[in-house]
Amino acid sequence: MAHWLHIYADGSFDAASRSGGWAFIVYEGDRQVHVASGKAVGTSNNMFEVLAVLKAISWIAAEAPAWSVKLWTDAAHVVEGCRRWRAIWRTNGWKRITPNPHARRRPIPDMEIWQQLDALLERHPHLVVEWCKGHSGAGGNELADILARNAARSAVT
Image (cartoon, rainbow, N blue to C red):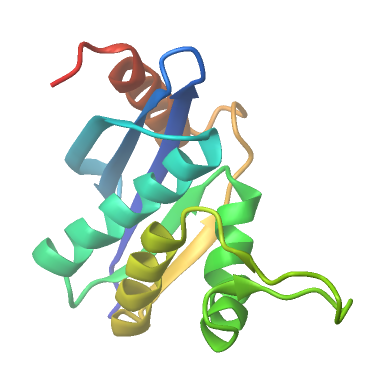
C-alpha cells in the first residue's frame, strides 16, 4: 500500500497521585484523522508510554486494519520492547532471564500490557514502531505529549 498512516503516541505519569495519561494522534499525510487520550491509575511513566502505544494499535486494529502504519514514540524502551524484547519475553514465559543461573527469573514490568501489545503486533505486520526524539519540534510528538500530560492532570473519570 502506497499510503501510510503516521501515529504519534505518548504517556505521562504523576507519581504523587499514582495516575497518568496516555494519548495518540493519527495522521494521513498532513491531515489529522483521529485523536484519543485517557487517564488511568498506574505505577510508572514507562507503563503509560506502553499503554499509549497499545491504545494506538488497538485503534488501528479496529479502524484501519489494512493500512500500513508508522507509529512514532519518544520512549526508546517501547521501541526496543516492540522490536526485540517481546519475542525474547514470550519465549521465556514473560520472565526476565539473566545469564546468572542462580538469579531469580523476574516478571516483566507491565506484563499484561506487553502481552496485549505483542498479540496486536503479531496480527499487524504492516505496522512499524519508530523512535522520535522527544521535545524536538515534531508536531505530532509535541501534541501527543501535551494531550497525555493534560489527561494525567484531569479529574478522575
